[in-house]
Image (cartoon, rainbow, N blue to C red; front, side, top):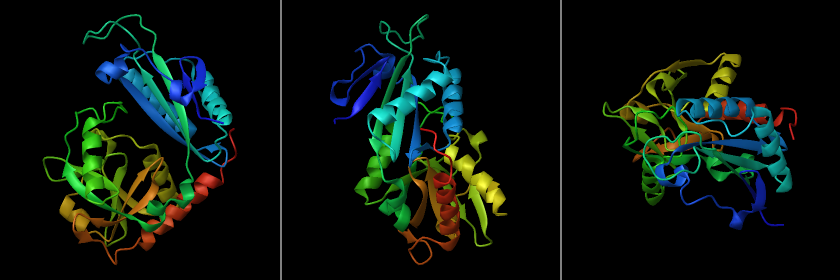
Length: 287
């Protein structure tokens, strides 16, 4: 059976799914998105993802395409139609279709698109073995707290990382401090076992996995602090890792040309990673 996509009330073969040429997501990146992970039939942190979707829509004054309850039902139906129990569901909402004009149009129907993908999350090589990252200037706009589909600077940085044989790029602000990854939040572990990650008040993305990790760290009596850290501080850290819904807790074993520790995932990171894996697999099935 081929993949099925959802576009504005219609399920169709993935290769045939399409939106109008004047959809504002296509012409202006005028839209937002979310990605929710499914493990063994469970949508992990679903409520938090839908909370963030609603916030992004509100910040851009985009009308929600449907009620939250209906959206949740559609997500689960799409996963079921595609036979996905381990994977992800991608949700994109744009302002809709209207004659091309920069100003927001009035009274347009938002466009809702969803797709799914199979992924064996818990056995990904990068998550188990760690990755190299590169640092690159942060070229993005000032509203990175909105999960906008306008991701060209992220794509440029991720491409730079791939060409350097790295798994991720950490973007750096004008003060020399790490903001976040192209598709993840950035963390380091100091030599006195303190977790550091940048505060969301700095207009970085409010990572759902980031928030869950903070809750788990509290349960584990781990010490963490939300503050900027420099590239040099990261390179001299005891450990480092990235987090996101799809990368979970991914150890960072090298930053640019600097190898961290012995070049393998650190014990602190592995401990937190193991606790997060347990959190994901022990939740009751929602499908």
